[in-house]
Image (cartoon, rainbow, N blue to C red; front, top):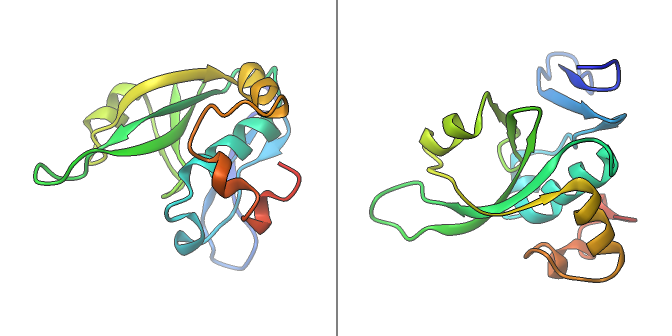
Length: 143
């Protein structure tokens, strides 16, 4: 990865230890678990947007199913350089196969390269369920 891409430890407070991603100069959000919960679409989109259209990131929409006895639910995540970033837990998986095999049981339904996701959002085209929530999230101001 180039100088503008990689991972580092968050230094918001001593001992935080959270891993943050840098893609094309943008850093992933440092949000609490409560701030992330239920906001996978806007958080994933913001990560892709701030990475820039040439980052190589891909916004993915699909489903997760955390147990056999529950229905799959809609979910969004980001694929970057063969890694998967899961926005609600801030977890990184070393491949899409590892993410699919995890307790998330992820199934991709839609893949949108960063440049297309940014252009579609700028044109007002909904490409995911984050649209209704995006304007309500203070940390997404200007997204």
